[in-house]
Length: 278
Length: 235
Image (cartoon, rainbow over all chains, first blue to last red; front, side):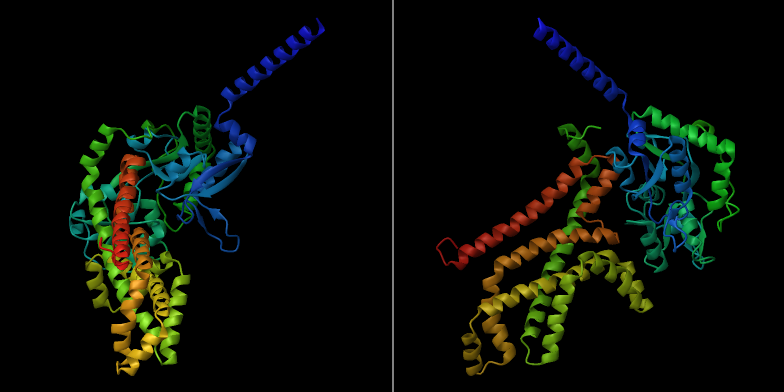
């Protein structure tokens, strides 16, 4: 009698434990993992002005537009922000394989990428632009026929450039800095890339380069989140909406792109659902 | 995302991207051929310099071989592509950039890097040739250069052909470093396919297969050579 009762008690306790574990396992998702870890890992560029770069050489801390977004999301989740450096080519695989929680680094929202990852509300509206040396007579896309153009390897710019000017020679480089170096050394006639990235590079050499009036492609960029993480997606979108309401979004834009920066761009969008942004 | 390839998937990918992958393979073969021939020639020159009676010449050759082998190949490629070109006059720069500068300078970097290894291999081959050969040749009136060219070098090369074939394989694989300076060789071409289609297995399988075939051809050459060297009837 006694052993049978104790066996029953042990069996029920194990069942209860199993059910608890199973229930917790099914409820555990990215948000829980982040909170348990105490940090949210954001994939950003390492030297991508003004999204994520070292401004003050004495502190050697990365700052920028993407870093502000990462810290806002971290504050919302009640954890610390941790940056992991990625490149244009690795940001989506790193996200898919769980090594970063958020893919910042100017991820353009495209239908092909939407099949692989989720996007937050657009955090930047921009386009792909072309810059050429100010003393060269290149002004329109037709002038780029048969010319060498530097682009970022692995991004969406290379195929877009070939589609627009099929006879141009697209040379891919691993980082924005190496592509710009190639332009500086006259290895290429032009450089195509994200407008704000190009402005960041141009600010080091004022007056030496001019940007084409026309965009190669007009784009919205968002924060990349792994698929099937609705809680994290909702939290990130809420963070963006709150940043817009509190004015933090405008302040961050002004600091890095607008009136308080050397670029002096005007903000022509607000954080909100993608259909509303134009 | 379906990671594993399907037969229909492969034929679709090949139809669309096959030619770009083959272009990448051509580029790899071109750079490998240039680098293998160039590093053999340069390696022989350096090996000969190390035998020189002039101490400065020996020192420079030894210094070159030791220094170059310690610097990573990527640093060589970056130096030749971004650094050395700035020292050229403008006319030379324009001439260079009108052609495929990445391929030319990547080949130069690979030649300089690999020649150091080839010269070391040759040096061990030269040491395996007994000193009596050199003495006898000099006694017969051969000049130092002709001794090297006609007596020592042929024996030395025969001794280290397997190592040199190994170097050829390494050079072939090292051509992928040029993707950092914008050359579209096979790995870069595979990466571009991956970036557009997000298929990982198929493009890299093609690249791996290409390297495997090239290295297998080289291995077969090495095996044929060893049979011939042994002097059997199967040569």
